[in-house]
Image (cartoon, rainbow, N blue to C red; front, side, top):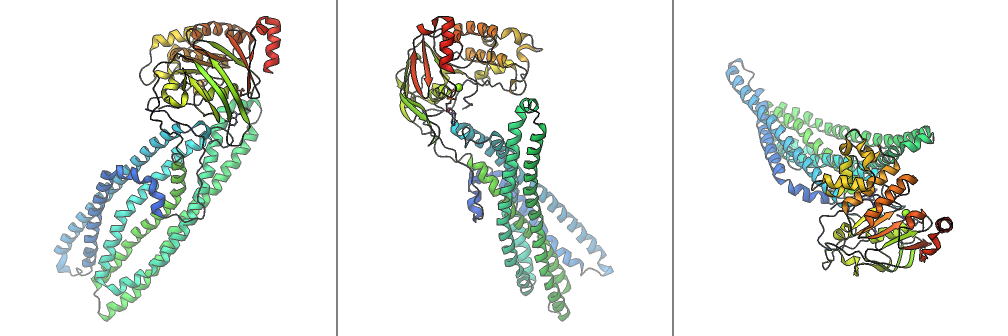
Length: 614
Ligand code: ADP
Ligand code: MG
């Protein structure tokens, strides 16, 4: 289903839901559990279903790693054997051994390549599925998640779904590559060493607890610094997302140098945090390696054993080879643990977008209204944003009959747009109910509710894409009917300027419709509502950006649009307000009817309206 920002002119078009939903405002935030130990099992728990769905690639990768480790385990004794083939008479056998060794190396390389290819495929597929799922959930979140003082910044969400999801891919790969391949190599080498000489092997194992401690302790530190780096990068992304679309405003206010400084400070915070992360990440493997060099002590013990004759030279060479080959899987295990700690904040922040209180409670009795007559009734409705905000609507009653045109005016901030948001169920009232055709909207499937309501809102939003795609937004998946698009554009007085464009209806409107003026955008938005043909139409200051001539044209267009449907028009201009049969004033959350007769005389009417709306 598609959910759109209500402050835009997008017409709501939902396609999934099968029952009505109850919305509850919540704005869960990702909180990094700084300093608190989280077990690896807990931190990867959200990844489980995705990993399971990729079991085939994972299994293939692991089988290839078995092949690769098997060939390695054959290589090690062969390397040992070389030391016993120094006799010139053994040249033939040496050549034979070289060929076998070459073959084993080849198998190892192919096995390694296939193992990595399969495991990367699994990790990237997991992240692709996660992204799709997270975005789907983000679209399902209630409006309170995006708006208000605790609203999440679009750039933050974008950063989580793009960059942080890529970090999760690295973590997933690293884990998959460690769980079986590195552990296998580690066990194979350890077994070889134990078989050759248990005493030397146990001596080498003395460094393991120290390594475990270092990796574990520094892993927790790494998680904390990674979390800082993620937050800093997300702030940078949010800032850019906010400032770049407002570049006109920045330039008009000569704010370039101020914004450059702000960017610099955010970029510097990101630099410091990322630097800390990278340094620690580079330091850990070196420390692990340094500890591993402690195993060199076993060389002296081994030399002693060789000199005493208790172990032969080729066994010692095999032992040392195994010891050297053990360092890479040990490092892999350490790296995977660190990768997990580093990825933990990314996993948490990504999935915090999906794990929210059930905002949508399935109402099994919700009805699917195919078509509504359009009677709208607000009954004793009160509403506030958040838990402690001031009441925006207070015990409000409003009854709009089917097919009636009602105008709503009042000072800005009076609650007019809020009233619209409640009708669309972007929020639920604190108290009271709203009815459409006598049915409480909580008992109507959200999808069908929004399908029947067309909104032309205050802030017009157009998307990159052609003019036709913007007007036929509702049908862009099913196929846009060009005849209807043209008819809608003509009725909304938009045809003339659209046809003057280089590619007419196929012209790209640019980012956020930047090729159009505010008034042109509004006419495109009205055309979009005409295309949707809803039973209930809401015009929320839809003509505010138009000049008087364009407004007159659009008003004529609206006359067409208003026929045979219920219309709620929020406006300030007397001429627009007078198109309505009844006029209401919404002030301080209270609604009262204004006698239309008091507005009819255009001179005193304008004055009366001014006093109502200022
Ligand atoms: P109008 O459309 O009449 O100009 P609104 O309905 O947009 O007014 O806003 C009514 C009041 O609610 C205003 O005081 C505004 O500051 C507040 N408000 C609007 N949206 C939010 C929000 N998402 N979170 C908190 N307060 C809000
Ligand atoms: Mg408003």
